[in-house]
Image (tube, rainbow, N blue to C red; front, side, top):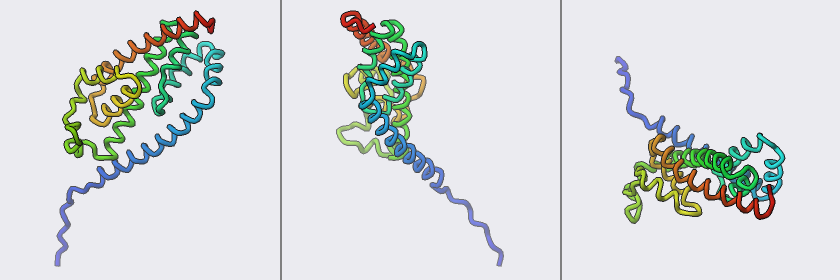
Amino acid sequence: MENIPETPSSSPEPKKNGRSQSIYILIFSVFIMIIAALFLTQDLSKVKNFISQAGAWGIIISILLYALLGVTLIPSEPLTLFIGALFGPWLATLIAGTGNTLSAFVEYYLGSHIGSATNFKEKKDKLPFGLGKLKVESPMFLVGARMIPGYGPKIVSMMAGMYRVPLLRYLWTTAIPIFIGAAAFAFGGFGIGLLTKIK
């Protein structure tokens, strides 16, 4: 009897592999988050001393430090006040704006993996209180919700990743409020620096 080859059925293997990869990335991210949080909370004064003595390298270190803060729940405003006092308001605005935008992309990346690991796209319509119908892709939401103090920016970034907001739209809607906020804290830090003679 002739063996008839089975027609390949659409297997969920690629989807399952993508989900597993997202879960591994999230576990690794949580591990990095814990280490970063422990390091920054215990040695932030040492980090500040190192930045103040590093000269031009202090700028690069500051930007990378913002990206590291993106994987923690530690707010970046105290760092912006410090670099405002150290580098002056204009350079500090550039450093904080660039660093916080980089941090927002780290948060977006984590959000996209949370979305993949939880099959968020398929489940979002079942969310309570009509949250699944929230217009996260809307520029008004992306800019406005990012202005909410505290954890608002981190939540917006994670949600944007989960909803797969187009990257170009995410970039400009992220950069505008971030640079405005960075300028406010950088100028505030510069003023504090003048008063306390940190500089």
